[in-house]
Image (cartoon, rainbow, N blue to C red; front, side, top):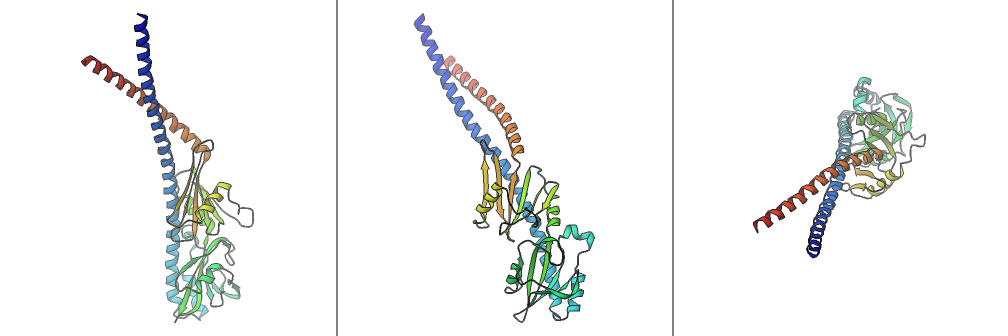
Length: 323
């Protein structure tokens, strides 16, 4: 009798260990699926929001480029007449009530010596302002009809932090000047923040040279003031930038750390213009969301394991009854 009892116990523990092993395999597989699903969900949100920012900025700049091209088509009719150029610039000046949606500051006409001689604010300038050292002017003066964006500057005439740009104007293959414009950074940041939907993501908008232009999140935006210490990027954002700047525009960069220090960062280069967008998911929000996701998943995993074990037991019992 004792021998039979021992055999039954061994058989019971043998079957139990098999069920336990199956349960462990199911639980591990499910855990991997849970991690992947959560990472994928967070990544997808960051990518969609980053792309949305790129689309907003690109549309604003492309629209501005078309306006500048219309101005050029009028200026080349009489390029030496500063009064005529002044009238053209005034006609295209943004009215104050539309400035929050247009984002540009002041149009200027720069002559072939790279001097601003006409400006929508100061009109025909008595003392021309030299732009010879500006990167976008150097490129514009050598490339007809192309729109070049420069590094962020404090506007020489607008007196505001802006992203400058210019289109070189050529007549009979000879450079005669440039139409220049500045995109007011504060307004751009404000436009972007209104289009965001996830309050847990902070976005850093950075120039191709690594200078932070603005950072924003839902209902919050700040333009970087280069008179203060806003030039420093947070360590992980700086690390993301250092990696993405070596990539082609087709490449994307995503940091996903799920361990003791959970973090999620996404970086991308914009397609048409020389900018980098870096998105960082709030660490505390990530932790809370992961915990909630984990609890739900563990409940489902436990239920799945129990159903699987019960199914195996039922199948074994049914099989034994048929014997």
